[in-house]
Image (cartoon, rainbow, N blue to C red; front, side, top):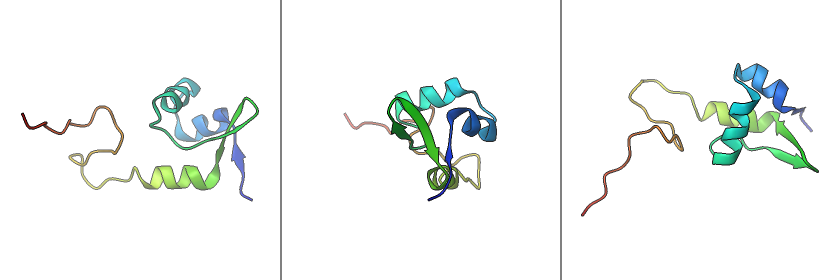
Amino acid sequence: MRKLYTPSEYAASRRCSQKTLERERTAVTGCPYVLIGRRVFYREEDIEAFLAGRVRNSTSETIPGNSRSTPTPVAP
């Protein structure tokens, strides 16, 4: 089994706040997490997969699940 990261450890490695992680969990846009009792943990393999899915080659590429992405037009 790989390491489990606490929200503070994961936030520090991502250079973001724990509040950002909380918002992502609520919006279901962040890294998958494990809930043990009421404690949140992040699995190393989930973090690696989440970050790998965010690699971009161009600024015009959109991030799946990002609410700031350009919306798809709806036909009338």
